[in-house]
Image 1 (cartoon, rainbow, N blue to C red):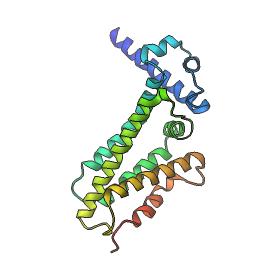
Image 2: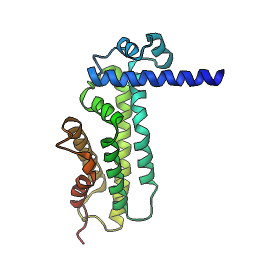
Image 3: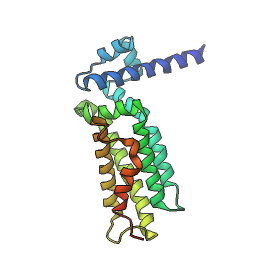
Image 4: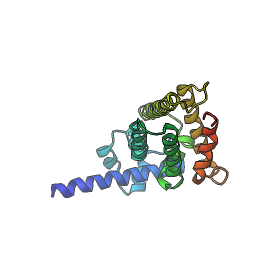
Length: 205
């Protein structure tokens, strides 16, 4: 019975997160109340408070559901000291963009982050967590570029840390454009987008 209760609690939690994701996507974060989320989930506000302290905690948990695959890919990139670091970085960037192109959930949640989130004070913990993850991603990319520099694969004037920031911004711009105009910025063509960017930093052969 205890096992069943635990499974039911987890199912309710996922139900609430699904409803929050849909409400945030439809109405924006500031205009979505816990009452709306509970109603959309077919549950009570009490059910929300059983699982989440407030809207910020609910928002943060929604983000955590999409972060895991990206964190895993970053770990894989960071744990490859051997081989061609530029080829590894290229593969990582392409996989990340294709993941977004092929996932309805990622499309919704990233649309919320980029276009439907006013970054209110009550969301500061979630926003701070996202900024922390952005910095971690840039650090991993910077280390891959540093390995490439040591191997003589980059142009002489390339600074790994600065270039990692530029790559991160470039990807963010592609994602924003894709979410607004998917036909104009089709992320299924991820390889072409990544190759255009990497071509500018590679040492000519």
